[in-house]
Image (cartoon, rainbow, N blue to C red):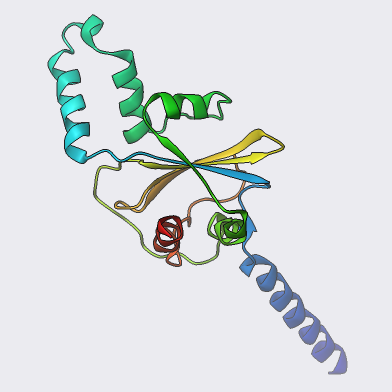
Length: 181
């Protein structure tokens, strides 16, 4: 009886310890700098660009490559991998770079972490990624996160962590409030 009680106690401790490990928030990135880019463009302006693109689609030469890349950046998953010249493209397309106070890094690091909670963030809207975070380590890009606050969607590249629950626990709201301070 003593043996089974000890074994049961050890198993319970192991279960508690393993759940405590899983409950920890595991950061997506190891970084020492975050560059934040945003653009103030209306949905109507984006629709106008899309309309012009569709209207001229019969003659591909009339479609501006810049417009195509810009739309892909705002609406799709461009880039799909880390591109070192990505910040230059953002500036070229009209995004504005804002410096983030390093005092905010711990809170941002917590938001961009693997989490156990799972809010049902499902949304049926067309995302527009107007906010982009570029994470760097020793001046090298280690990750990119494109955010659409209105749809509660994100495109996150450069991490091996599980990003499925990103934005849960009220993190979209927290991130938006943090960036509006």
